[in-house]
Image (cartoon, rainbow, N blue to C red; front, side, top):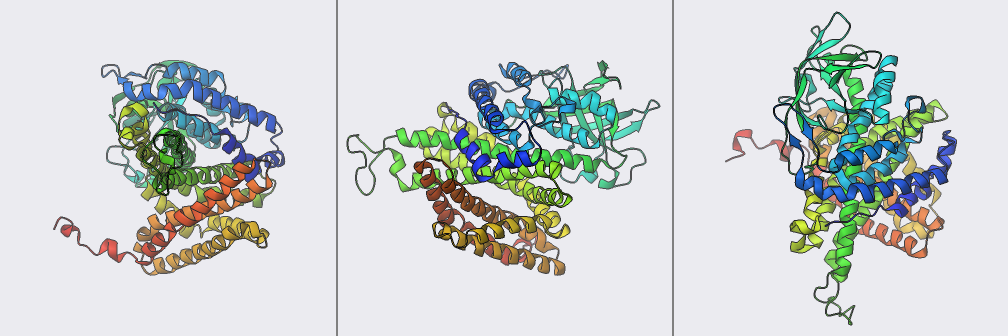
Length: 596
């Protein structure tokens, strides 16, 4: 069975030493977020995830959720509900929520280590509270005062949970095609009718009520995505004074049988004239929806990170224990009948890939989360604007790269086990199966790539990219004469310049042929991710050298950075060449000839 130990040392290193979060929290006015408080939050998060959630991971996979077709009720695996009760008692759902709505008012970025630990310990369980966070953000930013008082406070406390009801059987990414209807009622409510699919935590036994945030069309809605409105539709009707009433006419029609995350309820939700309240302005639901979606996309990126870390931990343990053959240069452990497989170069390749992508990815993700705090609490309009531009730019990179790297790392870790990785006993096959969904939900990797190139770079004129390149430029200038970092600074400077030139070239070519954007998107996204990670590895080495960490820790950071620059960063060469090839290799084959 796979084990999990929260990587607290590296989490603290990323927050304190690499990102300088302690000083920044003070600067942003988080008076209660001193190191003592933050450390206590991290320690208690680790305890909860290691002792409560992790033991339920295999249980959820084996039992799955049970759906009563007659009533629509869903029963979660044994122990899941009790774990949620402990979660709410601890106030974990309100960690970063404003105090006025019952939250603890701590920095948003502190929720990211908690999410990482939860997802590593038990991804399926973690999906139940995940979307409550997105729903809470949508209500906080777009809801009316009474909606925040009645609904938001209960989401923050965990008394109720929330969902995002966007996708329909015929309508996934292209929300302009959705058909769910919203008919106005005389009392100011709306009657919602339609079917939504792939609804995470759409039905469960954790809480007495579930708040569905549903995209639907009003009768006078214009066609396409500009005619979409957002509604809050509770499982049980709720009056404006917060009184819970009778069951709303909505029901879980089915639960999906999935490749992984068996303990997570993925529901088909049928709304049959269910009572709902409009959130925000009519026909302006996409704005609120993107608030939910962007929160969820960063959260899903963290899922990939958590699974990669757990897989790496178990592969490392196994590689140290498993005796098999001898090192090619001679026995490294002559007192044993064979050497552990960690002496083999290919096993080290897989382990170091996991270590480099996970530890670098942690800094990348936490930095993105920190921008949300700066965007909300920065001292100047310029600082807030730059942070908002930067988190918008980084969100598709975090979501796509960390989830794809999560799949890569869980498969590498499984491979380290050989045939033992393919059977249930060690739990590695579950991690590999669970990781696969993260690249699909909340926008596939291809959708993230199009969002990055089409919107964040072309439409917004690379505002976030300029901020990030500014960070790289400042770091390179600061350490230009530092001999201890020279091996990283030179390649980083070169790649940053190449990144900028590549972006300009895509824009120039896209002006003549719009297909250039779609053809370049996937490779541009990963090119961006690998260069961004090179920056974070260079910064990690500098931060480690300046820290009070042990010499062994500092040496490990430097050697892992060397591996990254030598073995992983060169992947950018392939992505650059693919971008240069243009749309022709993708579009020249006639559709009818695909099966020729």
